[in-house]
Image 1 (spheres, rainbow, N blue to C red):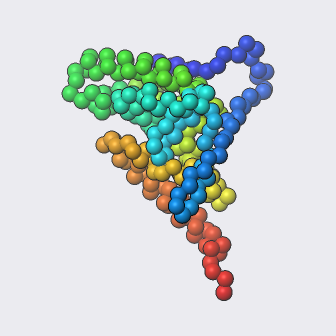
Image 2: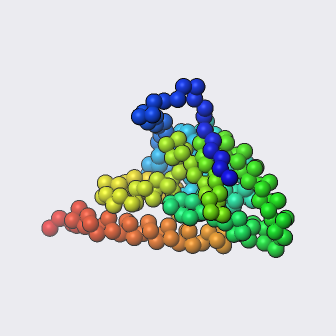
Image 3: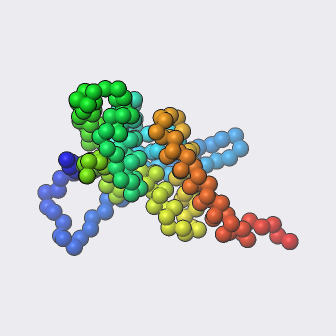
Length: 216
């Protein structure tokens, strides 16, 4: 099963031409009693997984409230098991998490109905692909048009370039992974991300110790 959504084009671009739609950024200042934090927020479609779960549609409107508790968990199950380079999630695992104790037929019907509801919400966000490969569900967004902070974090962290540290600080400034969301299955994701961030920042600090050493 494969569904790819995106804006239609009356005239397709040449085969050798790549069209990139930039995501404009707005800078907002979050001021505390003792410090000021600069946070970059996309003006277009975006999914925030650091800090409070937030979804912006393709016009920049906050549509988080449209995600019922069930649709939110279904969405996060699909997305977090798809990025980065995850292998997807089986229907049985989805049923086990969301509809424990239900018969196979009942769980399957519930899953089908709620996937349709979820697709209707994702249509408001931007181009995406929801497919089932080797009995596992995978969910991807066009990362040139839909900003996902966690995906950007993984991409920046993988480069191991010291200059990326400021970008990583900005991406994680909202807080830890889904700080106000609690699921049993989510604990491992939170732990892995937290450990990864700590390790990465310590590594960069050690590489640049000379910059922070006091002058003699």
